Length: 210
Ligand code: IMP
Figure 1 (cartoon, helix red, strand yellow):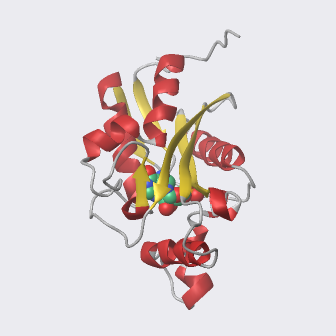
Figure 2: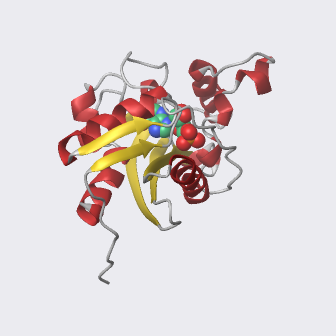
């Protein structure tokens, strides 16, 4: 089926995220396309509550909120980790599992706590548990007139323990992509950008809108 996407012309594009790790990766991925990325944080845009129950709903919610507040096209990424043995959890709640408020009554996010929670649930299933997992990335590109385009990417792999590596962000230290032995946090950024779920979604975005 031939799908026609609205084209994105060179100029300013809001990166509708307040997550520094994501903003850094999205900037690097957009660099070659004559796009001037500005982050929602730099523009002082409010961070909408992620009330959706799917990656798609949350990505659209963030992209539309930034596009209308800034009167510019806006790109949002909603992503997460789906663990096979946990029935796809944490999924859309991946960031929430790191909220210290929920588990420790403190502000901020603790990725080691979140990775430990996933590992604890896997360990409950015994030493032969299926450790396969995937990262999912849904990109929503929205324009101020309400039009939006969606692109979805995946990176398959398995979870390791203990965490390894200092690069990347979030759950990178426990995720070993398919065909590799290093975790995402041990793989140099340029290489991660070639094989990640975000790279997969971006490849689709680039072929659709540029
Ligand atoms: P949200 O899309 O802002 O709801 O958050 C998704 C969460 O998934 C992030 O905060 C990270 O913890 C995790 N995540 C998404 N992409 C990656 C990645 O490339 N590496 C590690 N963790 C990721």
